[in-house]
Image (cartoon, rainbow, N blue to C red):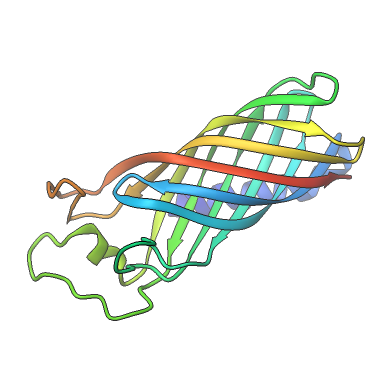
Length: 199
């Protein structure tokens, strides 16, 4: 977690101190739909993003998303809400009103504790849902791409699709009931759709 915090601090300092030299600063809101590799059901949230367009090819993102509902949606919930923070880079050309890009980001997913009584079987290692039910902060990574389409010179729409990679805690049992001593990575889809303004 120290590495992720340091990365976030450096990113924010660069964003604030470099604004005068930046070509543009974008602020947007989005709707996110995320999957978990170990659980069924979509996790839907709302969020915001600041992007510093450092050059015609490179942008730096700071993305914060809140998932307010219980998860998983169709089972006994192990989490009442989640907050996800991702900090990363986008690379892609601006082609008139359109900018396709590739992206990579790192950050965290803070899993809120269960809102209800959550019964767990007394085995070791425990199932992953039992580990997460008390709340946890998972390292999160994202690799993918997207597109920005200008509606006007100062407003835009943005869509992102990425592989969201979560590092789950261990020791635990994964979704296939295999023991994981050290913790492990899971891959799943994350999609965001939003709109914003450019300054």
